[in-house]
Length: 366
Image 1 (cartoon, rainbow, N blue to C red):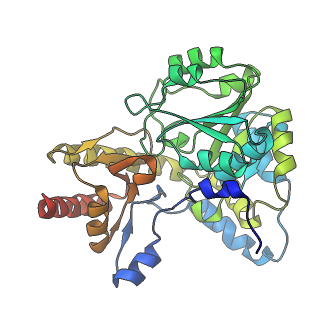
Image 2: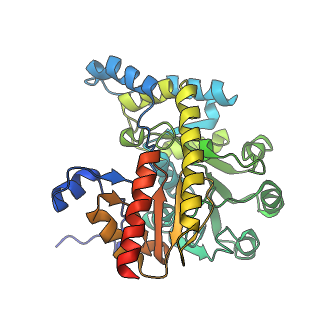
């Protein structure tokens, strides 16, 4: 019998939010709202949709392997040389590429906060390396403890800003102090998947570390505010030599043709981005107000397009009851928050329906 690598036993595959089609099929529901995967509730960038319609007939052609026009567009938008840009099949692919390129098994280490985005941990395990998980401090990255945990084997530090699934950030000054102390032989990954939703004035400028020649990899995505999650496309910025290493371990044609074309168009859709930010800010205010009214429920103010909500009971019960009412949320047991849900901020009517259903469910179980 063919045997897989023995160390694959330790990997728990990533569990995404349930798709709408699956819930409708399983529960016989006709209408379902999905607040589970932090997708843009307003849909896809209209400019991206128009670009896809024009390009769909060219789907028989292989995509541009080097993503020339998309990199050119990103270069112009962010005022950075194209040699400092990598694209990926979602920003998650770039996390995996970094693990494959910079972690030598079995002893090299990736450091991640326990309770932050799990795919960094999985990426290190896929590479056959070690993942060192550092406890959070008041639901935020404990930068001092991360520094204290560095060893000669530490090769990557992964910081998602904001943390998924918590929505918390590190602030400019504390990150400056942290980066001054990180050794030059360590790659720091800043995962900024929710960057466009940020309104906090003290949010750090991660580009300043790239400009200073630090070994950083800044990740962004088209999955969130641009509404291209189904096309799978993300991008990253780093030093040319780091980008070169990442390109050596990626597979060919990794970003499909329609994704590239849609992303180029989406970058010009300023109106859609602004509309999405307004919807998110309004939704946050409404949900904060309504959640504050519910007894024994704790939530974190978010710098992203989702809210972390903790309950006095196992959230699986709440999740299942909400599901039967046509609301998909996300349980967080694999993040060690068994009583919590992560809820995407939806359109006004979706937020209102969620609160209505949540109150009904909590009344039934308490």
